[in-house]
Image (cartoon, rainbow, N blue to C red):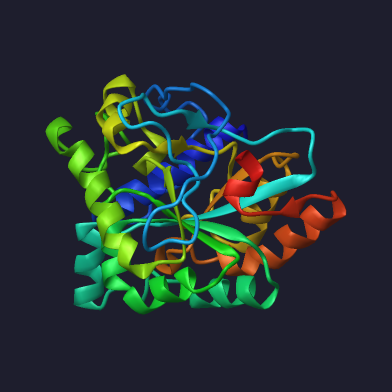
Length: 285
C-alpha cells in the first residue's frame, strides 16, 4: 500500500473511533482521496527562547503564513520519531465510563527512556490535562521535545475523516490555548504544530499566522492506530523510511496498541540502515 493509502487508513480509523464508533476495517484502496493539504516549504527557522522552556525551535515571524514541513534534509543519516498524543471529548468519555483503561502508553515511554532515544511528542491540551504526571515526565527528559497538536483534536477543515470541525473563528485560540496549557510543564518546548488528521488548507494556515508556528506533517505514517499486530507497523515504517524522514506514530495506548511492541524492531531496522533517531529540531533546523 502507498503512503497515501496507509495515511488514509490509519487516520480514518483513529478519527472514527475518536468520535465514538468502533474501529472499522482498513480502508480499501478505492477510498476517496483525503482533503487537500497545503505543502509549502521544507525548511525551519533558527530556534528562539521562550520563558518556561529550554528551547523553542520552530518559531517563525508572527503574522507570516507558517511553513509546512514534510521531512528534513535527505543527505544526512538522521530521522525524527514523533508521537502524537490525541485526546477528544469522546475519548475522555470512554475513560470515564471505563470502556478503555488508558490513552498513555507508559511502556513505550519507558522503552524510549531506557534506550536513550530522542523523540518529539505532539501533545493535545486535553491529553496534557488528562495525564499531567506523564506530561511532566516527558518534559523532564532532555532528549524529548514537546510540540502542539491542538487542544481537543478537532478538524481544521471540512471532510477530515469525520472529526468534529472546529469553527474557523476558534482556530487561532485553540492552538494558543494549547501552548498556554503546555507552557507550565517546561522542558524542551517548541513552536511546532501538527494538524489533527494532517488536514489543513489556506484558511487554516492563515489562522495560525499570528502564532509564529511551523507546521509539521511527516513523510512516514506508521499506521499504528488500531493495527492488529506489531508487524504491519514495523513494515509501514521500514518500507518508507529514508534519510531525513519524519515518522508519525502515537503514544495513545488504547488507540495504538502495538506501537510499543513494534518499536524495538523499528529501532533495529533504522540501525541496519545507518539511520540515527534525533530530535525533530535537530533534523529540520
